Length: 65
Image (cartoon, rainbow, N blue to C red; front, side, top):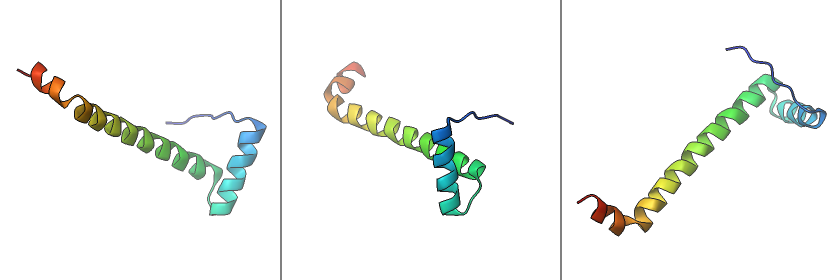
């Protein structure tokens, strides 16, 4: 899917700097950042579910009966 991404001058400068440091294109740097964000969100969701299961184990057990 094609997409235009509008960056502020500050964001553009930062993305250009990161891409240059890593020797990749700005597009590749942006895609890697998106992938990292998506992965981090999934990790946070799984951590939250595990915490709720642990903290509310007794309540969940009673509700399942």
